[in-house]
Length: 112
Length: 112
Image (tube, rainbow over all chains, first blue to last red; front, side, top):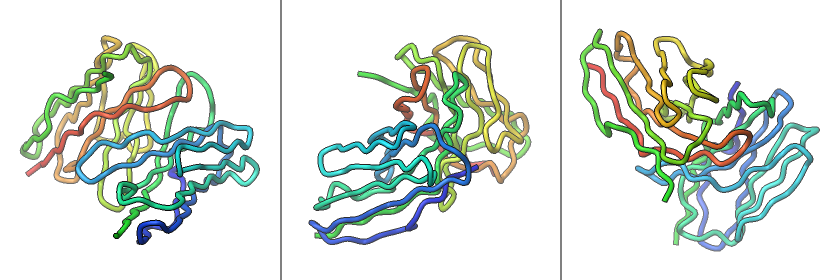
């Protein structure tokens, strides 16, 4: 089952912040975040494992609330290069037959 | 530099034709995936494989089959292409267990 992402789209001015949410109806083992620029392949941003951790990557960070089966991606002081579609991917089992299911994506546009 | 290579960037086929989409990775990864990407629907998992000759259905396997005879190669087969299989197909690979997915450039298939 696809995780649900919100919002579907967001428009920012350079320097503004944004939050993208990802939620699942089932218990999660890990959550991935990817960014895809127009005409390119998705690129890995970070992975969060079961345990409720938070991770950071420059001015992009994420949290994972295992109990709520939710993850959020935080983009602070956005740059033009942040524009693209952001996907969360969720994995439920943690076993060797690793299955990653993606949400529908959030289109982020950063304007000057 | 890590690489996932999809054999065809653009294909045009006729309804009823058999279609092969090839994917090769050079990273000795155990896991390989086939996704299709359609506007507004995100990345949907068709099939995945966690070892040679092992395969599992994803969320939308109907009308597709896969083959993994060698670790580095994962093929997606459309036995009898239909117009609703017109889409962008993305192959990805990863190491065993939860970890970064590396995506290919994609194969855009049009079925007339």
